[in-house]
Length: 300
Image (cartoon, rainbow, N blue to C red):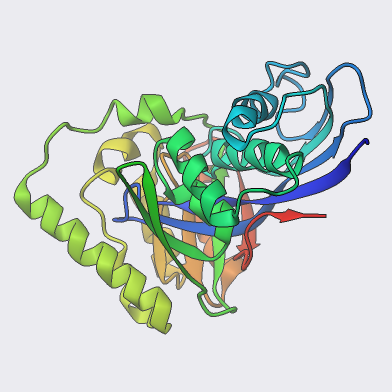
């Protein structure tokens, strides 16, 4: 019997300053996939981000993850009709890869009558992605704190107060995560590790308790931003502009090039201040003001 269903997966911003490969925050920018088994040949239609150059055959990343996931969930791969529509910019640090992994896994699971739980899917997605922050946020929603140990995912969800929004400035600069990781040192001084443990812990507690006044200090990072920021012209000035305009926190989203500021009011003012820096440096970017996604992926 043929099946039809729809999957909606939120994007994510990750690291949030000091929480490298640990902290993820789901945002209301979505990957939508309409799935049908009523076909003898895989056909993929694309709208939104990536529609002009992503593959429309079985080499499409979502379909590849689906095929890989079939063995894991115990279902035989089959041809699919996929209508993929994405609002998530690619290679901009907003979890486009993680959302695709989640979508591919969910397709396989739905075709096996949902045999795996959300927790199990999040764990498998983390193994595929290699780090938990993006896929955990896309699976659970809200702020997620996670680690992978001995192939097992340990993750916790926090739902920040509803007035908090993300102001994202998205430059027209593609940054591949694998390439950005090559900029990172193999070893760091002990004081750098202490700095990030302290601030990642403080960031998590501040988000859980609504102590947004602590986020500016809590978002200071010494582990990855100092090395990656060279890829984004005016990075320090963009952060300074966001803070001057009233942001609670500002940080590199994932490996970039997106920069995210968190605020509970004055969102447009903050976005304008960040954009002013970009305009003065004469490159192109866009501003999005995004609500936090309180829920992870949904299937209808």
